[in-house]
Length: 427
Image (cartoon, rainbow, N blue to C red; front, side, top):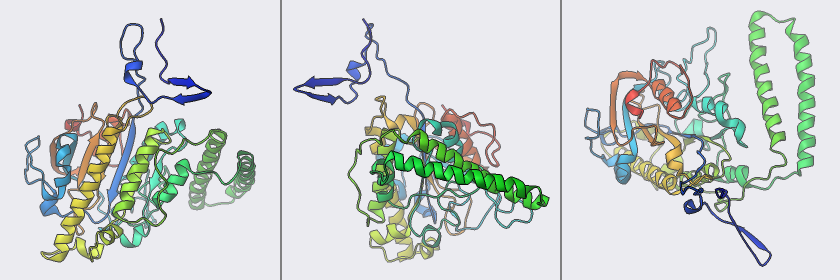
């Protein structure tokens, strides 16, 4: 007797229906459950302007499980055993106070290259994407918000994601755009798209040939600039090759309804979470990065406060609105955790158990870049959850990123300015 295949079907009256994952049908001849191992996944959520430090951070200054839920985290009380709070992390290179996501996932020194006023490096999500992305339609999925630079405290960049050359990766700016990327109908037939890709590849070949001729005449300084440009061109080539590989593979059927184009703020974030779940469930990607809106969140809650002014709060309406923002953001995170726990992937395993989720900001509040608010959840088999970890002051935030990579099965010896792992976070 052989074991039953993971996919099961019912046939009758000319109709075939694919059954959902049913654990009881996965046994083999010896009655043992037979489930394929699920891949690891990572999600990085970040927001500008930080938190209300008096009512968000736990007051207990000791590591362990003996800490109380604060008003800012109250909606997460049900999941207290499902996440860990980490205190006292920061980046070594203190950058502009309101650039909340520009260096959040990189830890780079803005002035790290002589003669340049701005420099960045690869973000941690793209390290994971480079390891896993070959197996998915999309290596990673950066998400952004409308007006991110001017309204939401994020700073330069097109998302929180930066490539191997320290160049910003463009993020999708609405649930509508994300839905169409994941499930939408293509405007072109596969043949038309293949023709377009071939034309682009031909154009790139011509450009590369010309650049090789130019390269011989350049100074060392200009040659470095050209090499950076060439790496961007090679990235385009890689993406085009991947598009060709997936050209005749249909997109998965949508598991959620198409979102409205005009949704903003609270509902926008909630829909983004729903779509992330759908993308992970269909294995369209295994890496998400989302720098979330703050100003539109405030607007959607009817809070007549400018996000920038609110972060410079004193006792009064701005302080109250800052607390409401924290509570609503925690409410949304609790919703996301709930969905991850309830949703099974294609192998019948909980998304919560196979997804490492980081949630926080590069700013604690005002212009303070120390004690970055950080919540870690998911990936229970590799992470110790349900605790608070008080790290030594000025612990590199990159230590956390390095630890999460290790917990996700990525053997990285160094990341950014990391000095080691946060061992107490690992099982």
